[in-house]
Every structure is written in structure tokens, then in C-alpha cells.
Amino acid sequence: MSRACQRCGATREGSRFCPSCGLDFWQAAAGQGESAPGEPVATTATAPTSGGGVSIGLMAVAAGVVLLLVAAGAWVLLGRTPVPRTAAETPFGRPATHPLILSFFAEARDPDAAFALHQSGEVRVTGFDEELISRVEAEGRLDADDWIATLRLADSGMPPFTGEMAVISSHVYANVDGEGWTEGERVPSAYLGPMNPFARIATVAELDYVGPETRDGVAGHVLTTDSWISDPELDDPLRRIAHVTLRESLMEIFVDDAGVPLSAFHTFRLEARTPDGEDVVMTGRTRYTFTDWGDIEPIVPPTPNPSPTS
Image 1: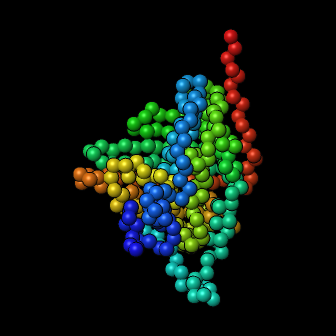
Image 2 (image 1 turned 180 degrees about the vertical axis):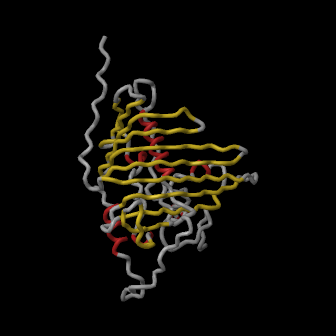
Image 3 (image 1 turned 60 degrees about the vertical axis):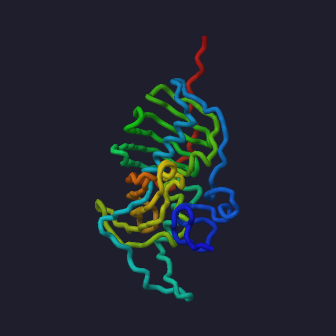
């Protein structure tokens, strides 16, 4: 049996899924396609619309995709390198996990994590003699799977979006251009994806402790991960037209002495080549600032506009 992934060429590590692209080796061997773990089954549904004709379901998915895209990893980290894992060996000869990594993982991967955040970033796609740029700025609150945020999205191929959005118990709400809140139907969480930027850090083994640092007078510590922790479908638009040849990412996380995230910087790079030899490159970066960690009140549904009366 080949030890390389038949889709992306990455070395197989004995697991069911490819560590690089997520290909399900079992289903591929059985001739059942290239399913990735957790991949939703496509369904057909009528999307609710806001008063201005905007599809709230699609808008939520689009906003979520953009937020996740700009929350992808980093391929350059200003020359920083992780502390070598040579000290504090375990009885099995493996280096012990740094206590701050354990503390951070417990905080960041808590399914009930609640915090406020500010996010800004962009995604660039270059190829075919053009460049497309998407920019996002968001400020809001998250409480487990619920979130509410003010969003500003600008895409070189679409009209800009400014407004507020919320997802509460998988129901989508939108307030576009100050016209008032409109409630949509329930959208399956598989289509919305997690909004916690650390949700795809799977294990503590994916994190490295860099060392202590002081930023803006605040003493803390720097952790990094170079795992691909972005949305698994990030490279789908490229894969439809080209073969992905490179995926690089790195996230730098600044935490306090208890492992609580204070800020993060995350960038990524994807390279692909079409059958005609055309190179396509997607890059992205985002910055996060976190506040009020663990001190967020439950997010309640906003009050929709009353229905117009005759």
C-alpha cells in the first residue's frame, strides 16, 4: 500500500485521515469518494431573507467563511523559533508538555468558552493576472456556540457589508445597515463552523512554548502552532481549478500566566497550479485581541423588527 496521500501527496502517518488535506483513506480505498472527517452531507433548503432581500442564511455562512479564512495560520513569524523540546523528559523518553500549554488548551478548547474579541484581517488570491482581496473587521462576544458581532466586510468582487450578525442556538439574526434585526431560520452548525479561532487545535502536541514576553507593559508568554487549523474547506475553491502544492500556516498566541489568551496573530499561504501551468496563490492574515475571558453573560436573541401592518 502506498504511504503517500493520493490527493495531496503528503506522507501518511497511520491514521484514517490524511494529516494534510483530510482525505478519508478508507472511503477512498473503497471507491466511495474523498470524504474528509466531519464533512457535512449537502442538502437543499430555502434560505430566509432579510427585509432587503439579503439571504440571511447565506450571509451568515459567508461571514463565517470570511472570518474563518482570515483566522487561518501563519507562514512567517518574524524569525521566532520555538524552545527545543529537550528538557523535562517523561518516563517514556518524550518531552513533557509545558504547563502553560496545558493551561491554554484547557481554556481555549473549553466547549463553553466565553469571551469578547476584536478581529481584523484579509485574504488575497492572486492568479490569472488578477488579484482579489477580502477584508474583515469584527468586534463581538462569543459564548460557547453562540455569538454576536458587528461586522465590516469588504470584498473586491462583492458590495461591502456593514452590520450586525448573531447566531444563537443555530438561529441566524442580521441587522443590515441599521435597518433593524431580522430573524432567519435555523442553520445547521456544520455549515456555520466554529467561530472560536482555536477550535481546530486538536491536541497539545500541536503547540510549542516559545518563552516569556512583555507587550505594551503586560507580562505574558508566547505559544505557537504550525498546524493547519483553518476551515478544512478553505482550499476547496482552489482545488476545483488547480492542484494544491503547498499549505503553510503558523499562529502566534500571547497568553497570561494562567494560559488565558490575550491576543493572537495568524497567517497562512496556499499555492496551487492549474493543469495549464497557471500558478494561483492564496494568502491571509488576521489579528485578534481577547478580553473578558470567562466573564461573558449569555447571549440572548435580539428583538426582530415588528412585522409591517397594513
